[in-house]
Length: 272
Ligand code: SAM
Image (tube, rainbow, N blue to C red; front, side):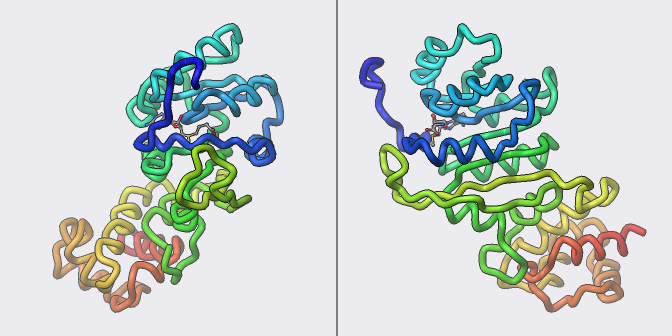
């Protein structure tokens, strides 16, 4: 960094993972079973993990927003045919790239703290769902991904991730593992794609609408949230209320208590 006159940007969540053991653990969790796999790395920084992935012969596409870092990455890896660098914002670039080159087999990233959840939600909503993804995230965000119904971290994001993936925390990293040291603890989360999505395709759109509705306001009942949300817009308040009463949901319940299956049962009842 010094050689290239670069400094760390807090705004871009630039905390480098400097401990070798967690790097190995994260890469190991990717299950790179053979060297034909296409891997995306989000936010490679100056390439500590990139270098390890290329040593495993992964076909790697890295997405980096910091143009100073991009210069270093070009110098280090351009000689490797398995390396491709997409410069700029991952959120703006991945979709076009995927249209041309397809969904990767794996995604890895020590994600920038401020936009980690946005990146994951963006991928899943737009159906870029590789078999395995492994991310390092701020612990609070990780807890929202792996939360169970009824807990305070359970949210619409938990449900979104749960449609296509089983998610598991596989490690926790104290600030001392990073440079510069962040203010927060991080968790490593592994996403493994379900053999079948938990929500059938024909119900997915309405399922996601209902998820957004029931979490519109955590303090309000699902009756209030659904009838004043897109469910109410779709069916009208009167018919919506009749449907809700006839369904298996308790209209006085709160979104945070509903599992994927509870919401799916409701959506299937309404759509069938
Ligand atoms: N991979 C390195 C490591 O593990 O040490 C760096 C991780 S650092 C937490 C996050 C990286 O994401 C930084 O290199 C930062 O410049 C990059 N970044 C931040 N926002 C980004 C975005 N929207 N698109 C692509 N990269 C981004």
